[in-house]
Image 1: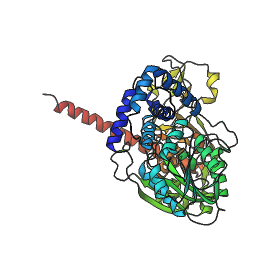
Image 2: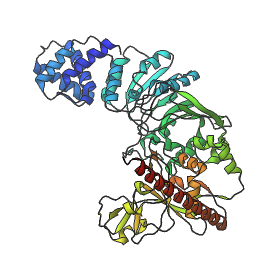
Image 3: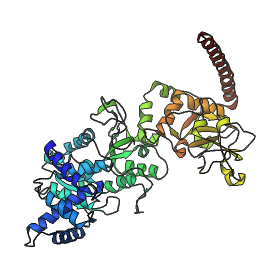
Length: 536
């Protein structure tokens, strides 16, 4: 969109302020355009009544909710709209999508998608095409020998896209829902998608393994690939490591398709969201022994994490074989790169026995506390109470509740507490107080089997560099740390005999006391010196 055209559109949309909502600007513009076209082929005189009547007919036919309530105001905006000689509809789509905080793919990521045109696809599907604006014309113009199907669930965007590609014989616009089974009766050589992510709303169609929109899109779109066709899709980090139904979906993909690439994109790659996302590239061919490319991109010279992504650079690049991925049990690229890390290799090569946390501990989330009571009988450990070495019991929140109602959440001596979200990984071992305590829902509780695992020994391991790396690998790919307690069950921990564990813990506690005493003495001495020097 050139600056002159953008100025004209903004001037026109300024006229709509107070008449229609900002999110309805493009719907309003589409309706004005359609009414203009209809009035041009009729001999009816243009009056507020005739024009508004045409508006109601058009809105009904297009299944677009009429954003204009005031007849006279609409007539004024309609008359002004007739002065717009040409509309940059793709630019308008992008502008409205951005104003509504829709996740938009930046140009550098779209260019990574476009690399897949090297397979010379005859048929291409771009799902929810508005997320690729304002780069759709570029994509089509650069690949004019391919036929394109652009889908959207939004009737307004569908009509606007028809305007954009009205002169293109190789582009079809479809109003359809990619989160419904059988949304289209075609197959394609290449599919691009950036599905809806996050949120608590679940897809209504129960034909799929998962009900989260992003996971439904992966499964559903993969079913619409021609033999040898490629699906390139951006998904949240949980696709790489989450357990349960997501794990079943990963297994389905890696046993039914050839995984070509798993790439981690930098935080903020999707505009208006802090979700860390991954680009997954699969091919509809029988899985074989070809290399699976594993990549990690950075945002080039971006100054801050919140800055727009203007370039992408490959910072880590390796490959794995399918049998290695199957043996690993997930698609965590952190683990893949970590296996090339000397620290991780040493951990794996060590002769010390290792075990999954889920086999030697109970892992659960704390309880949601809605109502606090300073005089309550039950203490509540929040993230803010978890320090680097201990828990701040003096500053606990309290809850008034019958113990029996929170019995399943009561903390026990030796429980290891870990923030489920936040900005830093830290752990603490709980010690029983004179009153019962529970953890809040933002805290994960790991309750070791005391016969096999000492809580302090587990803390020492989790606080170590290798332990931190393993926890980081279980994060759900957010700018702010977000860990699912279920995914901690599959973390491997070293498990020497209890005598060895107790010896490690004993030395840790003795040295920690010396360290704490030394720091306290140094602070006391420093404060005394400052007080003396600052007395004038």
